[in-house]
Length: 215
Image 1 (cartoon, one colour):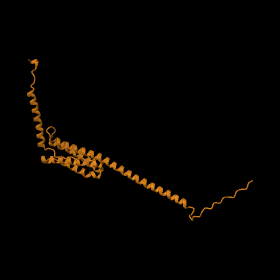
Image 2: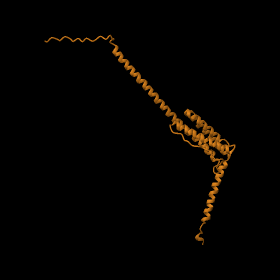
Image 3: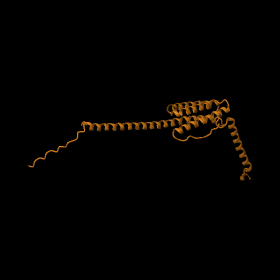
Image 4: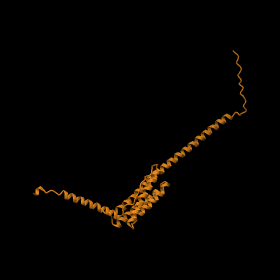
């Protein structure tokens, strides 16, 4: 049997560091890495949540503002129709309709005020006030025209605030006051007179032909 070779003895240099230093450093690196990952993930989650909140607020603001502006537009339509010959109502019936529309407007405004972005609240308040002023019984024709103009201006201001919130350029448009009742009636009368004149001229230049059976 051959002799067993002597064991090889490797002399490790003595660095003076404890034996547990290497695993401790490795553990620290693992902990630091996990902590960095946690902080990064947490920050990413916060940014994501913030973006989602912004989208949610924008969506709810747009939806509630659309309902609110739709109700305001119904009041403006009722006021405008009261100035025409074809849609004018008795004052009592008109005021009953306006009262019902104002109640619906107040409901829509309450919802808008609860969920709308803070940048939209002031334009919304301005439109709410302008709509109510427009719906009140007119003292003069000029005041009604003025309040209708204010309604359209405040409506456009809220539309532009919504567009800016959603990253869209605002609309640039000059709004003048609508015609008064007298002006509306005059324009309506001129239209009727013009139409009658056209019909008369056609009848004059194209007289009806005689019925052959009567000859």
